[in-house]
Amino acid sequence: MQKPAARPRSPHFSSGPCAKRPGYDVSQLDLRALGRSHRSALGKELLGKACSETARILGLPADYRVGIVPASDTGAVEMALWSLLGARGVDVLAWETFGLTWVNDIVNQLRLPDVRVFKAPYGELPDLSQVDAARDIVFTWNGTTSGVRVPHADWIADDRQGLTICDATSAAFSMDLPWHKLDVATFSWQKALGGEGAHGMLVLSPRAVQRLESYAPPWPLPKIFRMTSAGKLMEGIFVGDTINTPSMLCVADYLDALAWADAQGGVPGLKARSEASLKVIEDFVAAHPWLHFLARREDTRSCTSVCLTLDLPPEQVKRIAQLLETEGVAYDIGAYKDAPPGLRIWCGATVEPDDVRALMPWIEWAHAQVQTA
Figure 1 (tube, helix red, strand yellow):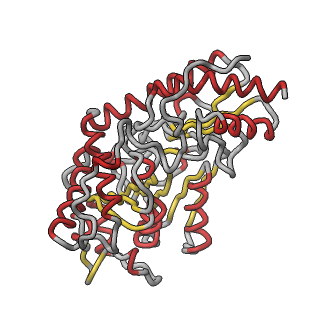
Figure 2 (spheres, rainbow, N blue to C red):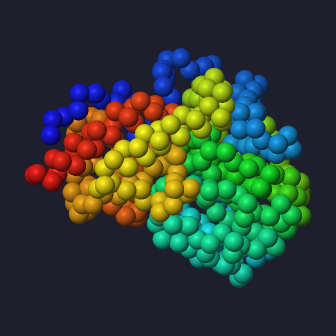
Figure 3 (cartoon, rainbow, N blue to C red):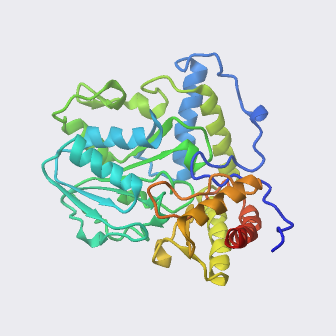
């Protein structure tokens, strides 16, 4: 089989850090804050804008808060777990690597006495109806390492007594998130919009704030996890007065990504781009019987972290990813190390659907190469 004539303009299909927005040019960033204190008027202005623009573009309810926190999405999730859990029993849902990480945190690190864990293997979801609205619920919206997402939020009660804590890092800005169902949501710049790493975003509902102000966990909290002072929320965190020193270069990069996202029409436009890329892969999989979605059900397929399996031995699947990287048409698309052998193609909003369209014939070519080698 001959090599395809067309190549993706960008070979960046990594699921994190993810592709920069189309047309990205680092020289165009607003770098006025470099070398300045993040506590300066300019620093606070830009950090505050990162919070307010995030809230506006995502369409957060007016009484929700969004803040910049340390350590990417992981830091944001753990900040929520360590600060909020323990007041009620907890139900934890896990069907891939990161959900299992939160299970480990809750069961083995926090060692909470009343925890129910609902697991499912890669490619599937646990029975969502098992959760109890009187308990706190911890889950990922989209399983980044399995390509399986929850299909809707009907299973979350509007009159719940517990909090919902949602790791939304590979869903934010590319999927519809029902904010009224989410008391805590987290994501990172480097996934959601192809920003830089090390910074997380934490979204809190009024119910989450009420928990913070009425409940003090029995364990010590490090400074970077503390969101209250004298029993009151530290409001500054949610207007750009960050807990620790952020990278103002990363902030400039994120503001550039937000401006691009706004120009695409916000979440509806970004979601359409992501779903267009998924449709390209769906059409290709339908025409090639040796390629399959890891997600068992169509309504649970991720439109961002698209995970595929192949009817090949693991060593040949790995060889396909290596061939695509050697050819310069796709970088970093091997399955996550804990997942079944396969390919993982990031189709978040910063990836051009035309690049995905150009990539798929290359996968067919590589598939042919490994079988004849």
